[in-house]
Image 1 (cartoon, rainbow, N blue to C red):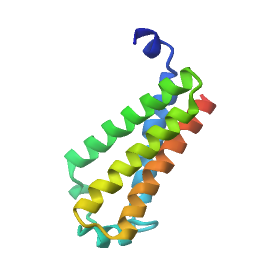
Image 2 (image 1 turned 90 degrees about the horizontal axis):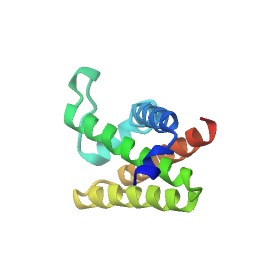
Image 3 (image 1 turned 180 degrees about the horizontal axis):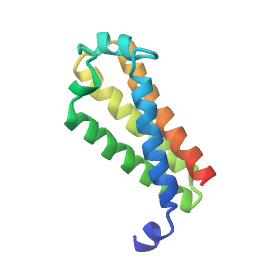
Image 4 (image 1 turned 60 degrees about the vertical axis):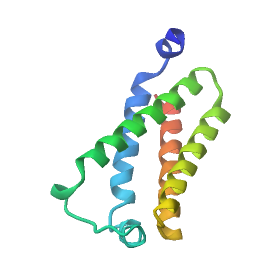
Length: 128
């Protein structure tokens, strides 16, 4: 495990986490998919001051962990493992949303965000 973590490109992991988080702000904003997602999720879009802190911290932790998995797979040149991990995370997110009866649109937005976040993280591994 130490050799797995020792060879990780930490800059790519951190940049991938931050960029994916920022993409999420845009993704779920009214400028892109936020309005339809909120309607299909049964929530109201609020101001930056009213954002749920626990949800935002949890999102950041999840993105970091996904970026770390992608960093480990990049170290060992196992891109298919990263793709499977991204799709698994996206399916879990979509499944959880389906249990709370989100609309198909909201489920697609959630699924798409995880896939886009994973692609951003893979690109960061290639750049840095």
